[in-house]
Length: 225
Image (cartoon, rainbow, N blue to C red):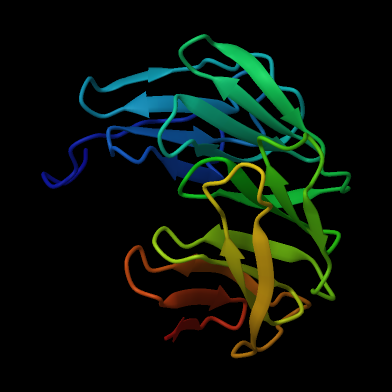
């Protein structure tokens, strides 16, 4: 039995590690790393239905994301990022970052660029119109990158790491396809303490304001403005 405030309960066979929302708010996906055939499930609230479009996973799934405007779905395994077309139910691209262990990814609001963090200290920027290989490889962190995130309104992106820091970058994407994105380091934030070799575990921008939230292994959530 559940309280009356609970409207929907979705039970999974394994522990849920990651949840991602579609930008329209009706769809969301859940990721269960330990599940073999139900690693990624896509749910729809309006119809109270769930579907499993990826019964044959290509490795241990780390995280997933919806494209902000197209019916594309991104699945990051330990070493690759697969881009699927949900309408055609087929693979359209396989990104090859060249890292050992992917930890996180974020999709640019315009949808043509991706940033990806890894446990082997790498931050990769992909231009989907450019190549399946990273456009830029950034190595500013000294330990594993735990999370990366694009701001939805401003040309900013951030990465956070077990080295106890969060790095904020300027990332300008141009409408001209022949002009490469401009990436500039802006600020290194050092508000968290390292606990048991763990540092900053997550970072998220405010959806409209130039504010950054970080959470750390020290139990603190910090707001930077």
